[in-house]
Structure formats: structure tokens, C-alpha cells
Amino acid sequence: MLRWTVTFVILAIIAAIFGFGGIAAGAASIAKILFFIFLVLFIISLFTGRRKV
Image 1 (cartoon, rainbow, N blue to C red):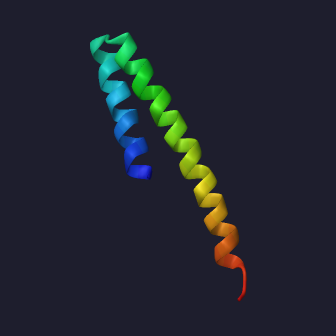
Image 2 (image 1 turned 90 degrees about the vertical axis):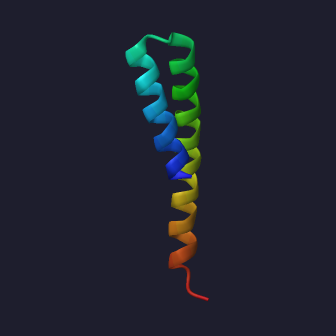
């Protein structure tokens, strides 16, 4: 999941450098959504990993 976030962030930066506003905005929004999904899954895995069975 983190790999997809990094991929879309790099795509957004490259598109912004070349001046493609729509592509950069789309890639940045996808990267932001994937980042928050990754963050929530990371927090959930922290809590479930510390629980004793």
C-alpha cells in the first residue's frame, strides 16, 4: 500500500514539473487517499499486534 502512495506522489511531482495541472491534481488526490488508508491500516495493525492472545 505504501508503494502505491509513493508511486502516485512521484507521479504528481513529475506531472507538476511538466505543468500538467489536471494529471498532477488527480495523482496528488489519489496519493493522499492512499496515504490515509495506509495510516489507518498501520494504526490498526499496531493495536492488534500488541494484544495478547
